[in-house]
Length: 226
Image (cartoon, rainbow, N blue to C red):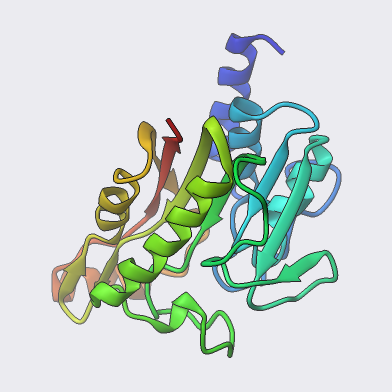
C-alpha cells in the first residue's frame, strides 16, 4: 500500500461508525466504553508492521486483539475485567513483560467514574477525573508502557474530557501533560464519536437550557519513546 493510498483509505475509516469494517467482528459494541475498531486499524497501519508485538493493557472487550490478528500482528491484551478467554487478567500498573520488548502500546482508558466498567476495586473507572489520584494512578501505567516499549516505538492513548454538574474537567489535556514527561509528541487527533447517546433531541434541548456543549469527540494522543 502506498502512502497516498493509506491517507485516502484512512480518511474514510475515521468517519466510519461501526465496529465491523471488515469481514469479522472486532470486540463487542455493547461493551461499556468500547474502542472503535477503525481507530486501532489506522494506528496499526501507520506505526506497526506484520509480526510486531502490540500490547493493550486495558483491552476491554478485545477490539485491539481482533484488529491486530486480522493485520497479522502479534498481540497481548490485559484487563482487570476479563470477558473473553484470550484476555489476560492483569492490572495495567504492573505489566508482566520484559523491558523494551513491545513494538506498540494502545490504551483506551476510562476518563472518569462516569461509566461502570467492572466490579474490580482496582478499576480506574472507579476514580473521578476531578481527583489528582486519577492521574497519579494512570501515570503508573505510562511508566510501565515506557518500560516495555522499544526505543522509537509508539504509544497511542484514547481519552475524553468530562463536563458534569456544570463543571468542566480537561481530562485529555491533563493526561497529555503526564504523557509528555515520558514520551515525545507525535500527533494529536480528535476522533468523532458517532451514534452517541447525546445526539438526540432530549440532549440538544438540555444543552440549550443549561448552556453546555455536547461533547462529540475524544482525543487520540500519539507519543513516541525516545
